[in-house]
Length: 247
Image 1 (cartoon, rainbow, N blue to C red):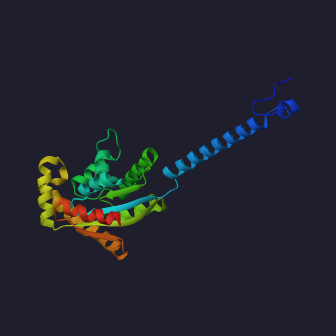
Image 2 (image 1 turned 90 degrees about the vertical axis):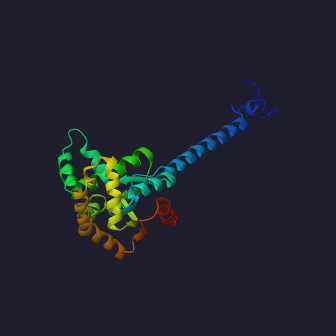
Image 3 (image 1 turned 120 degrees about the vertical axis):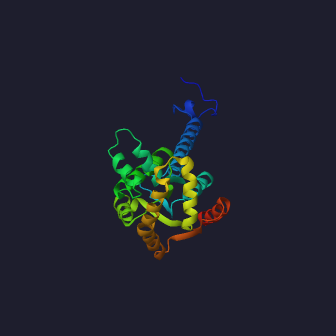
């Protein structure tokens, strides 16, 4: 005959032949319910902090002439506000250095000539980078520097990325060509970049005027463009850009 439970009085629980203690059962049930709620809370918290693969990327295109300071400003915004900075040019330069890359020759010949790399290549490299950062870091906010630069880029973006991203706005860094030229020549002394020579700079300006400016005009008609005068100090430009990002 089992002994009475210490939680129960005589005549109840075991002594009544129930075979269990109502108090202990209630305690167990309460503990189980609390544990289930804890698991649900953790699951809910995880689902809200880790973006799902179906959640669209938040994108800001960052445009302006060569040497306008796009990369510098994107680096500061990324450091201070948690947006990932993807440079179309850096992605292309990284790809062209990869051993055995079938795309390297195509990218090299276009960059050396001051031309725009085929849109499908650039867009796919950008998309791959966004997907990788979302998978590894949960990142969905992207500053895309130096893209789109042509109508082909826009079309390719719509075809390759489409509804997977939402374009919030376009940051346009406006700067006179003489200042851009001076900056690029100074950068060329240490950058080692083949596209920072005077001949290529002139070709890049022509390409920018003919292919990139119409894209900026198109986005401006859509009310997407935020213009920043980029012929000022880094600090002054950043203060304005940061204000735009916060708002």
